[in-house]
Image (cartoon, rainbow, N blue to C red; front, side):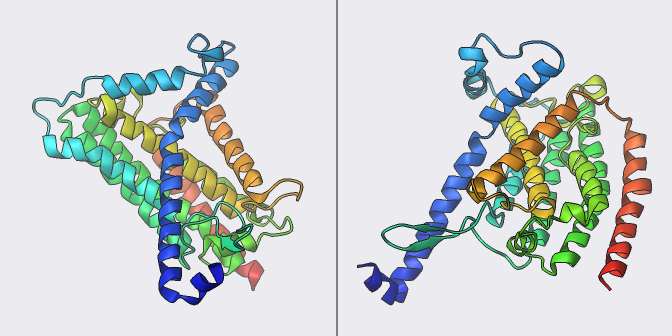
Length: 340
């Protein structure tokens, strides 16, 4: 039967389209559910670092606390400020959320697998774009428009300041983040994320050849996802939560979902670009190694949040423009000279 299907081009095309749709649904569901384990993990990490328990009473060891938060947000009153730009206020969280999901159209999660009995090879990515890294950097940058519009549409000075800080911060650090990826592209001689991972096979990870590029990528990545010590757009100490200060219920949840998925995205890119993707010892499947590496980076970001104090905004701009940007350009120059 499957031989007949393979002989029919129309059926093959229909099966390929259905397979892509299934992949999109599965990836989207996983991303939507990510805040549940990540909020629990972050609270527990904070608890252990600060020598306290964290969530403990809602379910065994507080494991049901994220579900309680989800139920609360779903049924909480959705308040729109009277003098806000209502249409922009409502659409801003969606504008911020959609791009961080669209990024995963080209992110590979592991090696291809073959389904038994039908001998059908399934790739562990939705699409292998030959300009994958450019697509990721371009689409991820669109998310800042949702934050800016959310801050402006709220008609609140604190939210507006948060949106302005976010625009300045993301534009500044996107340059260093993009330039940090150039050295990896030069070494792999490809813009495809799949090719970049394959070029690091047999433990030839780019972290060994691009330690400066990785350092720049890590610092700029933390700034891009608004995590402490670079959470200037939120900065509850001076802005009362910043750009999402006026949001509640599910629209607030969309902003939080965006932040968590963005953190996973930076962790995923760090693994793909510098730590060999799914490359690892053969006693575990490649996708398992990939998940372990991504979770390690997520833990690192959470650890940093509860360890370092917040920078001032002028210090943040100084680091981006006067340190990371020149350093990234120097890294590109040295990489080019070494390759030559």
